[in-house]
Length: 463
Ligand code: NAI
Image (cartoon, rainbow, N blue to C red):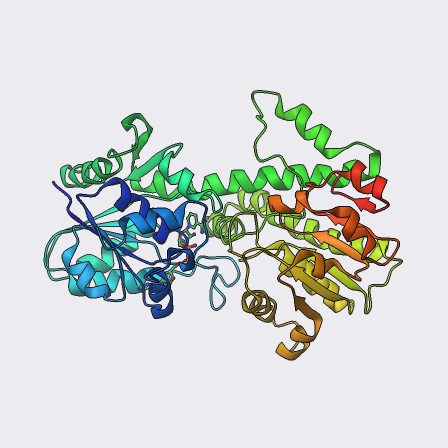
């Protein structure tokens, strides 16, 4: 089966970069990314690719190369579905905020809407690919909707979870550790799997393209995120013990990471993980385990989230305690608001929760982040509904310059590991602050000895 037209529903952090790379690597395939959000599509079509809605290193260049050639961004969802042989579903799957499974299960309403729309529009056989992260056995529900509401055409459902990490999306997509494709073991299923394998084989070595049954593929994505997050919570748990015992978590991480069975990656202690995926996917896993009555399995994974929440709260408590048990009316400067470096994504960022705690203590928060807009920061805080919109505006001041943000503050808290923070003139910052000048390094990126020699009181994580 020769694929010439692909459509992707959802022009977000996954759909946008993934399709841009497919288009760049497959000039013979027309790739159309559609979204209901008109502003988002308008931004993707901005003549200046520096203004596209998602910041990822290297992405603007790829979009500049492929857009208008074989990469298109559009709001015409039905037209794109009608024309494509393969339809990727890459819409958001947030944690449910209502009804059964509230606060745990994945909200599949956007997925179901996509399935119904595909069923309505499709007049030829289609391959439907789950790119979003979905609970195991979702493909069954999608198939049932497609088969029962469609126009009698054949649908093959594939699971092709995305393993990219924000901040390194382009390199991850260009050189993936593996591509996972789950599909039916029937002859029709195998034809569909091969069609998708052939798309990726344009740039990914075939030994890295793994094919499985649909359920293994769906569950592998939840499992991967659970394992990754578990490593962070594990080292963060040790960071608290290090602080009590005189051990240094950076040294412990290095020592254990040299064991080839453990490995050195994802062992950095921090203020806690954020991002749209880890928490949502683990909660989803916990919910699925509970649904099957597997309470021990559910409790085991839930602890990863409990530890992460504890780590965020511990950080804000430490700031308050160190500043003589009161931060009321003190200016505290946050360096970083994004959930990690090299992205403008702030979903579930630790900064939001730490700011919320400190504002409850009547602190005045100043923030500098190289990529996150003022409106985004304020709407992140408003979303928690802890206080009024006006109170948030009064408590949070956003700066375009880090030195201005730090001036006259009592303490600096590093919330994101942006590289530029390590290159600042810390002597100059020290001179502009109230004394004693505190630095709370929530990412352990600054040079503690150097800062202490300048005169800062430096507090990292886990030492
Ligand atoms: P996102 O929120 O950035 O993008 C989703 C887009 O889908 C939005 O622009 C929304 O307007 C659009 N949309 C929703 N319903 C629609 C509909 N019926 N028709 C057309 N457009 C519709 O979400 P993101 O981060 O791209 O995540 C998408 C999925 O990928 C989620 O399931 C997530 O778990 C998964 N994922 C995310 C990763 C990440 O790093 N963000 C990594 C791997 C997987």
